[in-house]
Image (cartoon, helix red, strand yellow):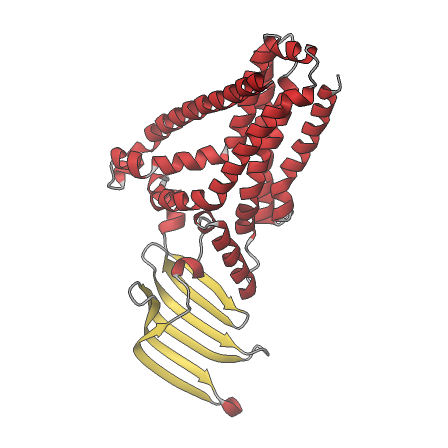
Length: 365
């Protein structure tokens, strides 16, 4: 039996590596051709991006679509084994279908464990490299979402607020600054208006210029103070204070959990995007095991349509899986229709139930 186990594991891994290599080549070729003009317009060369951007982009794509690649891989090589009646010969020898499925389980669990570690610790580091340059591959409209000046408002905690009329995340500079601090009864204790604000990288603090500070005293008295410059230390970097939608991708799981907790403590309710990222990191590796057994159940019998029918069915199911995952992510992030935990695990629940039913049916035939 060990010979057969090694044979199936070799087929599994060999076909998966081939699929990964093929996908990487196709994506890089197509992506470079479509984005080369934008890259060169922004003052970079394609060769520079091939070294400093595309390796990290490919890791992101591979991890994102890995479970689908596994599904198509298992459909492909299992269908070939079934068409060669190798599965029939194995079952006829007296072994059970559960025993035949053992190398599938072992291989998928090992792969899922590796992807789990990459998702939680390696991919965030890679995303930092990717996201630094990705804006220069975008269209003008999409690039302005990250580079254009925007109005900023953030809550530091239940008592402190920051408003900036026009802020640029690329330069960490803004104009029209307003800071307000309230007591527990919502009475204004301190207010600072300033013409400009910028981040001092060396001191790790914000500097405001041309400021007017108003502080409430006893008996409703007010104290006024003004000056040319003043330091504002909020104990966090600009990326932490004014996060964009990509920030969650750049943090390891312990960092992301800490960030989400801090946002909750601040009273920020708009954290579903980061919760989706957190739950997705575990849900996607688990789908590798689920889709492995779903593919095994669908392709382990010899059918009249053969390999072509199984691949068509596999690609269709893969499309439904990806589409449902993206729709649920959108519903939980923007509309709040689903909780992020439920949204990220619902595809696994549905496809896991289907995989269990089909596998049990196949094993008892």
